[in-house]
Image (cartoon, rainbow, N blue to C red; front, side, top):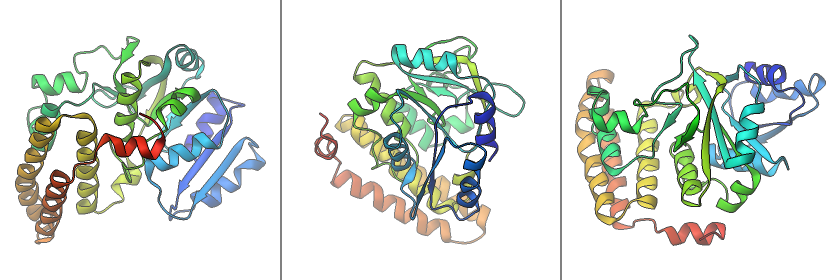
Length: 302
């Protein structure tokens, strides 16, 4: 509830929509007690997990506000939002600076450039983890940028992203094929950029981010399978045929070291099963690649 407490302090009077994706803790019960203190809090309690994209779209439909802020539950607003709202109204989308508990900007996460086939291959193969200073990773994670300077960026984290309602409507919302999580915010920003909108980074608006608590509750094997699936969905939508195939090849090759590391870590053969599932997923995606036309039919956008 510290996320809501920080909002009440730093952004009093705003309408707050809480979308709960079938959580198993006491979140729903605790949020339902809050209207006594803050009548502007609205709760949407899902019976099943609709994923980040589905929940975000639900939140947008629950309000008629012109500027709408996506805020993860593990994010605590530390400054007022006025500068971000102004930037969002002017450009279409805006993002603030995510910091760790020490107050330092979360370099490599708060903003990134759009992934390329090479940068995704480096991610899959673990090169960026083993050699974080390589040129591809430095460019992808904006490690060559001063995070205290405002200006246009390509892809801020969806954990702290503001967009105008007309932009969301123009893009047809978040693509719910990215389920339950990963790359839906990258895809949204990419489509916004392709449509001519600018994403403005406003570092004077800050929020503390503790990092991925919901995702960490997932079993490692399932988490990896979701990540691979969403990564391939993004690559299929935004890369041409041969670069996409290259990403798929990198995905298959990456399962070998991940499986070995998993066997050592878990001291059993369960990672082998996960490996086969991921390879099967990659082969299936290669054979029946999702076409952009499917997105157009589903949303009415072209």
